[in-house]
Amino acid sequence: MNNTAMIKAAHAESQPSPDVDLVVEYIDSVWNQKRFAELSAYLHDDYVDHSMPHVSVQNKEGLLLYLGEMARTVSHTTEIVGLTTLGELVICHIRISVAALSTQADTCRVTEVFYGYRTFRMCAGKIAEHWEII
Image (cartoon, rainbow, N blue to C red; front, top):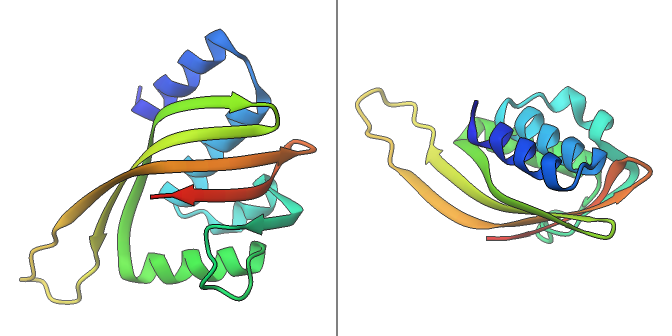
């Protein structure tokens, strides 16, 4: 069982929540497995991503553009190391591993690790808003 599954299982024992399940699945499916076509299954129609102020489009389309560009330039994995809820918010303590993709076979990829938080506001069983602190 991977760390994300263990966090989800531990949280389910103390506070069962379909919102938590959805957020954990979203991070694994969309961010880690790069299944971008599944965005609509997780995101509310009025989704706003507050973590991308440098992108003029902070909705699903903007997120899709951002994720596509990231997939071309870096290898990354998000691991949930802690999880809590507060009303309609799901708050994840995360560990992100990032390495630049290189076109040169002899280039050594250095992986950097960052810790931070992702906060999701839920609405009607989907993610309506997202904030990130890294």
